[in-house]
Amino acid sequence: MSELKPARILAIETSCDETACAILENGRALLSSVVASQMDIHARYGGVFPEVASRQHVLSIIPVVQQALTRAHLTLNDIDAIAVTQGPGLAGSLIVGMNMAKGMALALDKPIIGVNHLEGHIYSSWVYEAGENVPPEPQFPLMALLVSGGHTELNLMTDHLTYQRLGSTLDDAAGEAFDKVARLLELPYPGGPSIQKAAEEGDPGRFNFPRAWLDGTWNFSFSGVKTSVLYEVQSLKKRSNGIPVHDLAASFQKAVVDVLFKKTMDAAREFGAKEILVAGGVSANRTLRQTFKAQTEFPMHIPPLSLCTDNAAMIGAAGYYRYALGHVSELEMDILPTWPLS
Ligand code: KG4
Ligand code: ZN
Image (tube, rainbow, N blue to C red):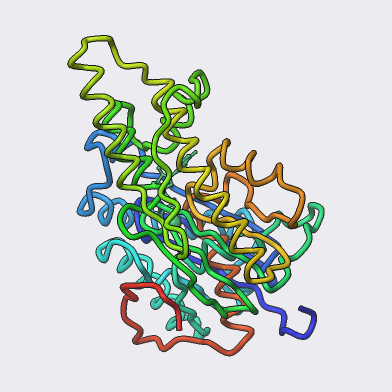
C-alpha cells in the first residue's frame, strides 16, 4: 500500500471492559500497545457490570494513554491522528474513550477517526510488532470470519473497508455460547478460556452435540448446541452420575469449531476468496486455531493471541486505513450502535 500517505496513529479502545491505547505506524507497525484489563473486577459478578466498567475506564484512561506514549518514546506532537472505537459496545464505556479522543483531537488540532469495533477486529491481522519480521499483508478478496462475544459473521472483503456480509448468527454469538456453556458447567468467568482449559483434558468425541449447518445460507446458530449441553447436564444430574465437565467442554468446543471451520471454508471456495482471515475473541481458542491453520488450501490470517481479544492496536490499524482513504470523522460524532459499516 505504498500509495497511501504515511501516518502515526494513536488509538483508543474502551468499548467493554478493557481500557486500551496503542500507537501504530502506517496501519501495521505497532510501536506500543497498553491494555488495562478489568477482568478481575468483573469476575466477581460473573460478567461485565457496565456501571463499574465505565468508572474503571475513567480511572485508567489517562495513565494508559501516557504509558502508550512513554513506551513508544513519543510525545503527542509526534501523532498525526487519533482513532477511537465509536461502537458497538457499552455506551457508558465508549463515552469515556470517545471523550478522551475528542479532547485530544481538539487540543492538538489533529483529525479524529471513529472506528467500528468489529472492523477493528478484522484489521488486527494487519498489525505486527515494529522491528520484527513483517508478516504477509492480507490479500483481497478475503473471507473474514468474525467471532467475538457479541457477533459471529462471515464477511467477504473485496478491498480495504469494503465488506459484503454473507451471513451472521441467528441467535447466540459463538463467544456468547462459550460464556453461557461455561456458566452451565460452573466454570469461572470469562467462559471461553475456561472451556478451552477444561477441554484440554476432555474427550471431544464423547458427546455428539448437534451442528446447525443451516445449509443454503451462510448463517450460524449456536443456541441448539448450548441447549443440548444443558439437557445433557440435567440428565446426568438426575442419574446422579457426576458431571464429566472436561468431556462436555471438549465436545461442545468441537461442535462449535466444526461449524465455524466448514462454513468458512465453503464460503471461501464459493466466493473465490484468495485468503481467509479469522478475528475476534474466539479466534484465541486453541482448537479453532489448530483446525484453521491445519488446512493448506488458503493462506490463513489469525492474529497473535494478544490481538485476538480487545485491544487498541487493531483500532489503530483500521483507523489508519480510514484516515489514509479519506474517512475522517467529525469531532461531534456520536456513538455508533451497530455493524454494518458504511
Ligand atoms: O472480541 P472480544 O474480546 O470482545 C467482543 O468484542 O465481544 O471477545 C470476547 C469473547 C468472549 O465471549 C470470550 O469468552 C471469547 O471471546 N473468548 C474465547 C477465548 N478467549 C476469549 N472463546 C473461546 N476460547 C478462547 N480461548
Ligand atoms: Zn471485541
